Amino acid sequence: MRIDVVSIFPEYLSPLDLSLIGKARASGLLDLHVHDLRSWTTDRHRTVDDAPLGGGAGMVMRPEPWAAALAAVRKAGRGSLEEPEAVPHLLVPSPAGAPFTQAMAHELADEAWLAFACGRYEGIDERVLDAAAEQGPVTPVSLGDYVLNGGEVAVLAIVEAVARLLPGVLGNPESVVEESHAPATGGLLEAPVYTRPATWEGRSAPDVLLSGHHAKVAAWRREQSLRRTAARRPDLLSRVDAAQLTRADMAV
Ligand code: SAM
Image (spheres, helix red, strand yellow):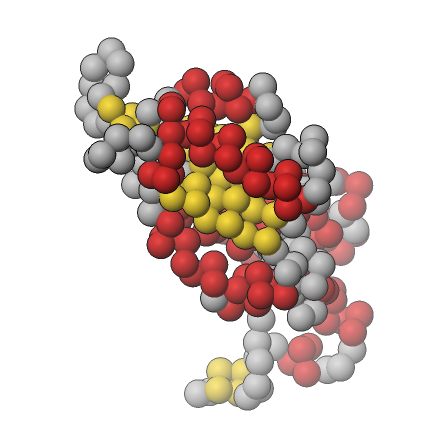
């Protein structure tokens, strides 16, 4: 997968050199490019913002550097993907975007090329998104119902959530099958997890986990998963496909 990120703070994305994502980059599973938006400014001060039309607080990111940056990204990506018609799916972090979910992460992990436009200040002039939508898919995406100072933190989260779903990035591909929010679990929260020692400071792990009885362990995990979801995120239960519920599930 190729990923391009455009930001006025490229150093903000340096954690993407670390850990499993860093390894995925080093091994070529992830071809990630971070670009400084100011490279596409033309004035001495490398200006990227201006006052909002109609007045109001803050500044808005000007369209010209963004248009030039996105055109350059499209050109570079087509060259590297060796597909003259390829276009990236442009993701624009915004508190006014669609909520980012695990289901979206799975969809994005199937794509060959993603690009991110990191807003700052009051955001990016809307015409940049309108023009980009004539070139390819554009999705404003929100990390949650709160406001950050810029899109970079959202990009770190989204890239990590997507890249760990790419084949070969995690050591054990099963890890992503039965975890919280995974499609295979119907989007439920994962059951509590334990490791050795079986008893720690007088607290014992559930006996069933030491039983070696796989079916009983699976049943216990399913029950805990339902209980935890009902307690912490009852909103998620409504998304569970009723046809997938077993008699044991209904008893929980
Ligand atoms: N004026 C904007 C509004 O009220 O919708 C908020 C702008 S915010 C201060 C600056 C930038 O931070 C946004 O352009 C976006 O890139 C990013 N951002 C802020 N909150 C975000 C969130 N919840 N999810 C994703 N990106 C966010």
